[in-house]
Amino acid sequence: MDDFEKKNLLKVVNISLVLLLFLLVLVALQIPKKRLELVFCEVGQGDSTLVSWGSYQMLVDGGPDSSVLSCLGKNMPFWDRKIELVVVTHPQADHMTGLIEVLKRYRVDNFYMSRVENEIAEVEELKRVIAEKRVRWGELDQGVGLKLGPVRLEVLYPVESTSEVHRRCNLTSEVCQVKDVNEVSTVLLGRYGGFAAADKFEFLLTGDIDEGIEDLLRLTNKLVDIEVLKVAHHGSKYSTSEEFLKVTNPELAVIEVGKNRFGHPSEEVMERLEGVGAKVMRTDLDGVVRVISDGKKWWVR
Image (tube, rainbow, N blue to C red):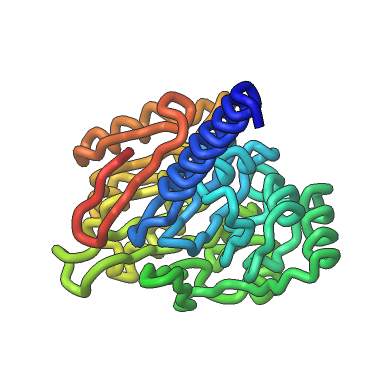
């Protein structure tokens, strides 16, 4: 081997070592840390929240289109193609359309959605893909508990099976006043950390509930001084009442919202949040919002 060949071989070896080192660093940076991460995805006028602990993931809603795939790609290790839990809070396009593509690209262990019908094309397509992929799915009722590693999530609403809601109230909640699938939105209270209030981190995911359902939730006595609130219905003036905020007293309020014709978030809600001293972040202005907690302390990245 002459000098020229030796130099070329050495160059190839050096380049290979650099590439290998780069790959090792990339993998090391993506190794999941054993802490809770809440990622409020930027998906336009819709909801999608990724809850992660270590290598476990739970996706609550999927937004109005495939934008959620970008959020997952940036917030899950590139080799991880499995999502342990997926929850559709209620069958509306702005909350579940993106899940069609998620199911096509990721393995989903458990899928939870309402049996309440909403006769739109997106719901029918989602059902078709669930059947095609043979995804195990079920329904969530009040009191059901979910686990994501050491993270515990409790279903606070709906108060009874949505199939019973459908039979009794014709697509309404127990309140039976407004025929709207928003009234069967799944509400999840998440806890991470110790048992004492000072040693745990709590967050509340509210779907598109309104003030009437907030009143029902206040009666549970479980919503006291939570750290992070996902503001209901993109900041609609018919949600996030002053009474509800006085009980929950969130330190951070995240509004998942995009360009819209509904006036979301409303000035009334922004004033109410300011009134309880909550820091407000919006996905339309702040982009993806990431909240990290070790069970005691928490911070926004």
